[in-house]
Image 1 (spheres, rainbow, N blue to C red):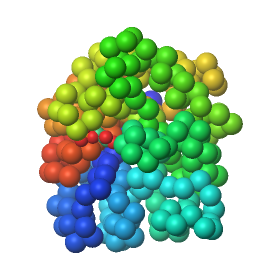
Image 2 (cartoon, rainbow, N blue to C red; image 1 turned 90 degrees about the vertical axis):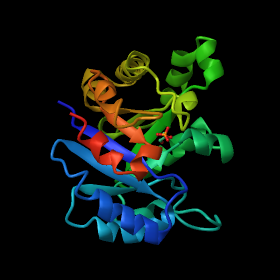
Image 3 (cartoon, rainbow, N blue to C red; image 1 turned 60 degrees about the vertical axis):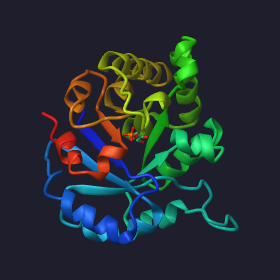
Length: 248
Ligand code: 13P
């Protein structure tokens, strides 16, 4: 039985002061034994956030990471820096990074491999645009993203990975995929993992849905057999996040 995982993606929001206040506010609301809870926060908030969640069920994640160990890469954050700071998860290949920062399936793959090498769990994002959905190529597109993201990843590593299916047209738009649409794609992702690896890996890997998840739609989405939780943007910055974590 897969444990659900609900992660907040704070994106480029929250100064250190705001972050600490939000963590204080959310701490009691997101307490849960049944769900893994992750706050993926801006790089500058990571160290104070790790300190602030000590003794709680909250893990801190990063929103990005570079695939080199160290060196002349101005502005980037290395896997070792994240590990040393106490980070357990890292979002890789969010559609905003692909769109605004030119990330490709190939750089996503390099980052995924690096994250595993350092014992950080990658939350690997995939998702189609509205045009791709309208053209009926959603599943083909997602399969391609998944196959490249998992190149040279072993089955044992893949079992620990988290995949976030985030249709781009549903991000920040208030337009959620229906639970059937989300389940169709999450099911296809699990099938693709089964093809690459085996039944056991497909059974173990956790697949989240992301895109306008809120307190009102989380229960229906998370009840679907192939949806193991959510990657939440806007609603992760509000007390509503507690309702999403405790969706039952
Ligand atoms: P919203 O929940 O704001 O639509 O954002 C989703 C997302 O991009 C999470 O990574």
